[in-house]
Length: 139
Length: 436
Ligand SMILES: [Zn+2]
Image (cartoon, rainbow over all chains, first blue to last red; front, side, top):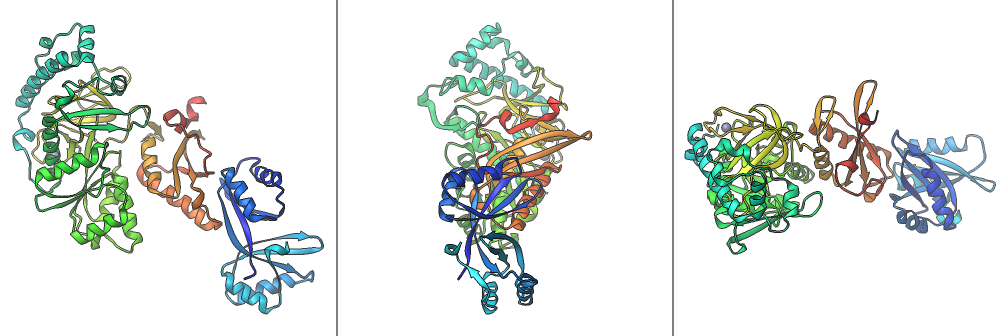
């Protein structure tokens, strides 16, 4: 299955915590390709796509962060109007819903990270549509 | 209602007769400690007291108090009133702060202990036909062995399940048709939860009576336990320094706990000044062990806050009762007029394996209204990328807290290992109202 590992980190809403994560990773030469933050009033979930996810887990756990790995789908989206919405509509038609998603650019390409309600179904329909699904090593 | 009384002679004694008996026993006790416990002899000498000065129970106010610190200072066996060769059992309390305290029992002490537990079990309605699972920890803690021998003494069947293997516990409850349960109230709730997770309910069990103690619990918790386990839940009170469980117990009326007054003499004092308060006023419970011979204590300050309730109970017992104890004098917070004890919060958190057993209470006043925030550490392996389940977890804790505390608290999930690790009130409570 062509999924990638996303790193999720539990963070309290207090100043500088995202920076603490970035710093810890940076010190070990780990690159952050993308991140997104889901927040409540008192805590948040920081979601990261990094260059070396296994090493990142070790580094953050050593710093007492609560971390968990989640399988997500990452697609390279053609830079054409309506391309993304066509994909999302196609998934919704098949009862695959998006729990969250975020985008990032790498070079000239735009990538979309998707956490679907059903991973297998999501991949199946994306493949059927010949979407450009990325693997960890392609990032 | 169950009307059985284990020891009608003692539990329903006339108050005059009881006073008389207490006076005689106190006199004997003072004589014993004066001659056998240097600690008490010195204290009495400082007060210019001789055993002969203590003739009636009313003379008790002349005697010195004993505190937990005295027990620690005389660690390990400085307060024994008998040679070690007469001691047949030792229990130790871990002590949430500082070094452990050791309590030694003579065989006579153990006889009295099982007698008072048999009184308690009888008051709850336990009979020889019952099978009672003892889910208190067995070992140095007094709960397990104390309850165990009491059940045996009564003639019921004891199942020494202790703590730990909940799955096996539930299986034995079912397979044996266990009818009684003795454990901490938080463990009872944990059992109910585990039962529910297995797709079982109270209908799958034959439990009918629960004896719960060793930690403060509320009327709300009683209702929840009774409903979820399909039982009648009763309080059992005790503390290892004095004896262990059985010092006091509820009856079928569930209106205060009866003190085994022929063995333990209660007083209520102002915790600040040490002044003895009239019956009916709230204060710190002080107990004197009238009949103990291993490690008798004079006027031991329990730190438990309660009110004595005089008068004969509807159950027929004449022994004095005290109201539900919610916590300890040195810990209590008053939030929106309600007494809140850190131990209540702790018991809720301990029931939920998703959280580390560390917390911080932050009390503040916003717009003239007290606010209570409970910060609790998430366990790393309970973290999930799913925001919905994280919010559920927070909500679940909030609901539990509300049912136990009777006021709502704002739950704040904090990162693992972020709260101070040392124990003691100062590090578990921040009261910003005092600072303002
Ligand atoms: Zn009664």
